[in-house]
Image: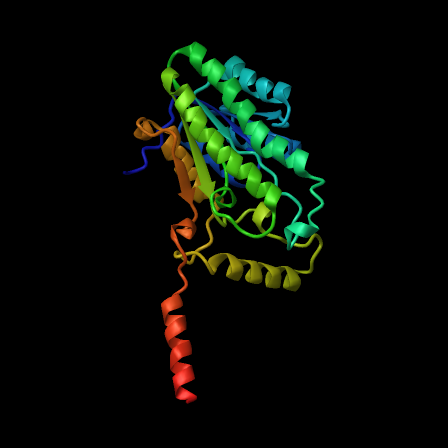
Amino acid sequence: MARTGGELAGKVAVVTGGAGGIGRATVELFVAEGARVVIADVADAAGAELAASLGDGTIYVHCDVSSDADVQRAIELAVEKFGGLDVMFNNAGISCAAFPRFVDDTLLDFDKVMRVNLLGPMLGTRNAARVMQAQGRGGVILNNASIAGTLAGIGMMTYRASKAGLVHFSKSAAIDLGQYGIRVNCLVPGHIRTTLSSFQADGAQADIARRIEDGVNAAYLANQPLKRRGEPSDVAEVALFLASDRARQVTGVTMPVEAGVTAGDPVNHLQEILDVRAAALAQG
């Protein structure tokens, strides 16, 4: 479908974590498609700069999504400044400390990660749904999870658990809120190129940073059928579709944006086995 430049014309959205990464790309795309957007984040300088660059259709508000009062203020600001709320994108999230093995994990960041990654979207969903219910015209709620929440793996257990909880919560909320015409869907990004997934070392020299990036890219691409790192704009495009009237019959969906990682293992194990067998036979 050709881009019309107005898929969200007349709509009002709140995007948490909207000052950078996936959130920033989504804010920019939503505005380009005609929406008025409240950018909610804790990165005040970046958020204010983005709002100023996008004009009168955006406004920035400091928002710690683990705070009920902060989340409510962002939603109230959308109503006060722009007249209502049509789309709530609970995008903000943080990682947990990276330990190679779970037995080494201190779990000291458990409460913080859970409050931001799970409680935050729950607050955003509930508070937005209250406004949407009162408006009587339905609405869209998007929650940003991760393949870490749908694909089991080693390490970063707290992060995985928070995102798995978000996936299940989103499905449950879709069932609960459908009676009000509110659609709830969950985005599941894969190895998207953001600061959260870079594993860069602070202050590293350019050549060292480049080697780290090359190694990280190789690790990420190893289990992707599509051999391309995703960009924040890739997720933003899916968010736009789910927020638009094109998806008016779509709710309770867990939407992967991850180049096929969860579809299955792209490694040709049969070829590996045959190669091993051939080598063994050749050696006698």
